[in-house]
Length: 235
Image 1 (cartoon, helix red, strand yellow):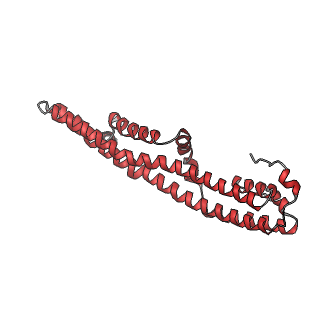
Image 2 (image 1 turned 90 degrees about the horizontal axis):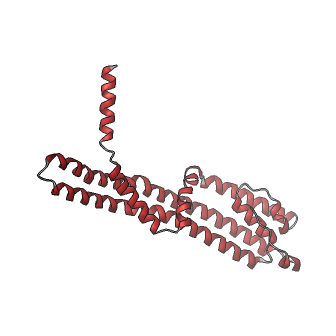
């Protein structure tokens, strides 16, 4: 037991050498500050909320569900009317909104305008979230370099005191390490994965809206009352 405990303590001490709260605060705090300053408040909030979709989103499954929902909307539109499109049960909020807009659209041009605005808004929101994590990845190495310079300055300033050289050198090295890890192993991969998820999601959403656009274009001229009827909202 004594030997195992000794080995455990050695492992803990070895790991503790790589933890410096000052170095971590300098790199993480500085990089976060830069990313926040380069983003809007909405983008910052959305960036941290993106951890949920980051882990659970399945673009392929979403695309298959969208295809099934669009096929169901087409079937009910052919059997009854495009005004019944909102009766199709869909799991995703995006397609529910699209179905309600389709059933309430005054004409094909009105639906096309909504579709363009919807996709543009989604691209803008996605870009803001991805931009935050990309900014964090860009800033982390620079913050690490700043910490390295601070540590080297402290080391050269205390060359006459050997006991003070070690902590300054550790600060210089650890800030570089933290910057590389934060950029290359955390923020960078998050930004890259969010970019892939965004591209995949926008691809199937654009496809679904294009299919619905063809559906409303094939519908006879819209009835006058639909142009005057207020749009319903989907919560």
